[in-house]
Length: 83
Image 1 (cartoon, rainbow, N blue to C red):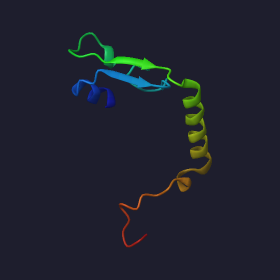
Image 2 (cartoon, helix red, strand yellow):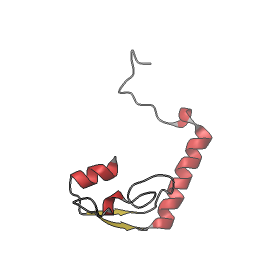
Image 3 (cartoon, one colour):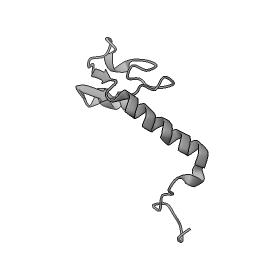
Image 4 (cartoon, rainbow, N blue to C red):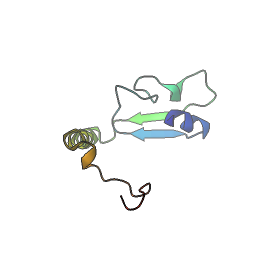
């Protein structure tokens, strides 16, 4: 979905830190952003501060697995009667 939005809006360049080897269309699983059959390609650069970013992501998901859904801050937008 994000790759499609980048192609439709003609974004010229994408810079990110860490590839997701399980999903992603920006060069991780497939590379829609540089697919020659499309009429627009996006310049992709990855690995910017890769080690630091990988450590932050690992810590975030470790905390999420440890705390589960109860550990997340719940949104107040959809609450009914202050629940």
